[in-house]
Image (cartoon, rainbow, N blue to C red; front, side):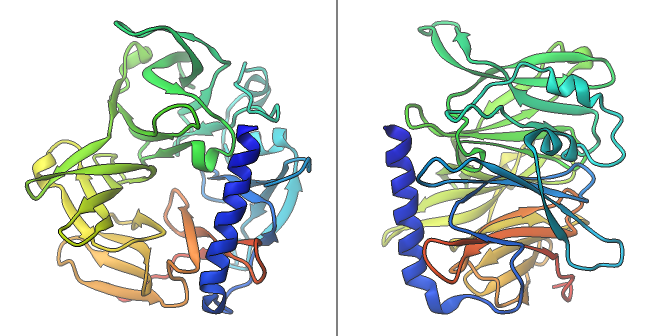
Amino acid sequence: MFALLRNMSLLLLLFCLFINIQAQTSDSFEPLIETTDNVANVYWSSDSKSLVFSTQPIIGDTKEQWYSTDFKSDGASPSLQKITSDQALVALFGETSMIDTEGLRNLKRGTDGNGAESLIIPSPNNLYYVYVGEMQEMRYEGQTPFYAYPLILVDVLRNQSLVVPELPIFDLDDSNIFYHINWSQDSTAFTVSTRSDFAAENLYYVSAYSPELSSVTVERVRSVSVEDQIVGVEPEFSSLSVDGKQVLLRVIVYTSEDIESNLLLWNVENPNMNQILIDEAFSGASFSADGKSIIFIGHAGLQKINLMTKEVALLDASIHSKWAYRAWFSPDRRWMAFAALGDSAPAAQLYVIPVPDGSEP
């Protein structure tokens, strides 16, 4: 019943968004796919050569369908192919991975409300991966026992695993919304966003994996300080720098006139260096490949802000936040996938384009 109400709400949201921006779509790109289903489980492979995602019915009993893309070396547009969930599992580890794919299939993973097993998300260097285990009773010190899915971190070379402490997953349905992993490019840290109909929304920052995974550092990021005020963190978005020591966050700022959604740069080791980068709603953001700039989708379009000078360059005015509502950048930051509203409600479109270089601001 709760799942049906949630899907009805999502359908209504997509329809309202379509009505508001029907005349603001772009004809500059060809969509990879257009569907009336929900585009979910969007992840790049560790080698940035493939995008893996699924489509899930918003309403009805249509079975979830998995897809992957192939990128050609000549720069041609990626091709789309239907795959099985087992093929999606392997595709995420990239072409050069030495991982035991048969061993991956034998892992005891948590399943969502439709019986689909959770994905296994590799680090960019393929030396670690994380997945959600089967639901179990959890007990934290001083708290009443409860049931949730454990998040498990695996060291591939040492064949060691660790249940990440103080990080329960309560809902696996549609991992774009209820559970998502973002790695730093050097694989030293990752974030986990969690959400549930029955539990609080949270964003966790995981780092400092010790040898043989005997311990790990977990920080729940609910608020951060900036410019002498405390701002709340919206958990569904995060993007890490190459070394994982800086994280882009969406924060809520209360002003005398309104409540604003801003893009904040969180300095993990030195919170005094936290700073608001843009004071407007945005659809997605990422560090550039060289780490010197931030690429984001704002009202004016796809833009690039220089972290040193704070100057902004417009890369593409047609990809703006009133049309494109979510974005996923490849680990090497060369490609960007983004979801946008289709030509008829409640259709959604998924695009994949090279990240424009633009003039350095």
